Image 1: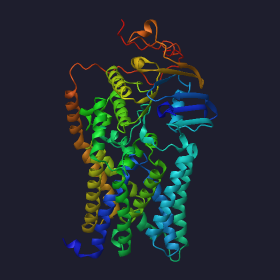
Image 2: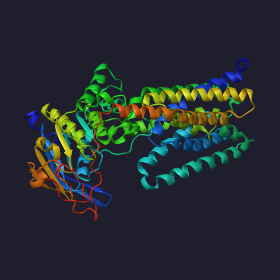
Image 3: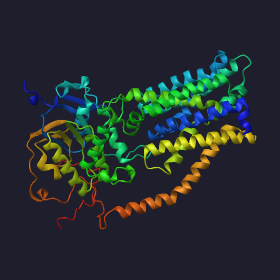
Image 4: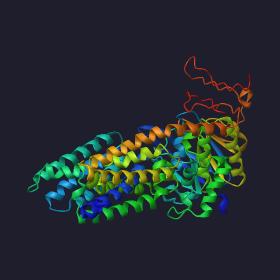
Length: 258
Length: 300
């Protein structure tokens, strides 16, 4: 069997509960080498849980998950996986520089955490990829939301992973950083990296995405090529009007269409 | 310096230096994990060890080490499995540890709360040869762990979930941190006392943060502050008749206040430098709120 034909991620009939509430009710998902797959869905549809089950942060009670053809439970080769968590405001209680944070991502490629010249170079290179090399010595607390997200992506790239898993990489990210991120991701995909990412909407990453998987109430609703947005939604910078937002809430107006 | 002529002062100063190094070296990881009060909890549990040492006529330092290591491991296990009831279980462990110490020491032949006092508030002048040997061995272990595994411990303390996904043995590293903290408590017990141990783990780190932007610098400055205050406090207590533990802790807090005041203009200058480095006319960030109303209108 051709090694490239083996899926990088394979979920079969995966079920998971949070508390007593079923969050995933039998998900099937396959990601092949070199593919860029977006997981879409409303809040509570299970998309984050699905991704977190792949990396072993959510216990599943039925089904199977394979990573690089190995059952997840016995998978140990974590340097092949780069994970970008959903950006949180929670940070450590001690100052840390951009380089110190990104170096954590390189640990999986070192022996006993000893950094060699090649490791320092890889950290530096990861920072260059996201355009943050000039901020290498700055405290991460001094960064904007978008810059912080770029640092978390550099941390995932520092191990030079074959598979990138990202949870809402565009949430809370300014437009300039969104463009940098889209560009970084494009280069990674061109170099053959497989990508699974959770998105709230396709947005600026749309041209990169091979396949969109839409979840609803813990089930796969759609699995196929992404449907291009139509009408006003197809234009960059369209207004975000949320039908369930509290009455009187001001829609997020980007101001680019007015 | 005439104070070095006395063997008991040599031992006291050696113990003080070792505590000045080890307490902030472990404390920085506890502060990073936002478990700044863990040292305090371990200190309470260690009292049972001291009491048992007296009762069984064993070395109180080694007994306290054994019991506080056990207590720290239980605390870590409660953190994993305890979830919502975790803090109540920890409270019981702390107070049980304290009550156990008082109970055991009063059961010991000739023992009374007076024996406990030197462990609660420190008693540098009574540090014995065997205490110094124990303190040296334990301090060597603490330095080895906190420096040798600094990258791993940093990663785990900064972002536990990410550390798990990079394949780090997170549970083992968490246990090791807890054990190292417990060992540090017993190292510092004779110098500042069990009730004040936590201050020396946390306050030098908080003081160092006023000046530093990086973890490495915070570590170095915190250890430098730790050594300065433990040695300074010990010397002060030799010349003035004041208790060393309390002197050391008050000195540390004074350093913290002094650095906080000194750091205000520094922070302002840094903010100005940062603002100047930003290109002019940089638009204010346009962020999309992380919490959105429920909506099925995804771009499909």
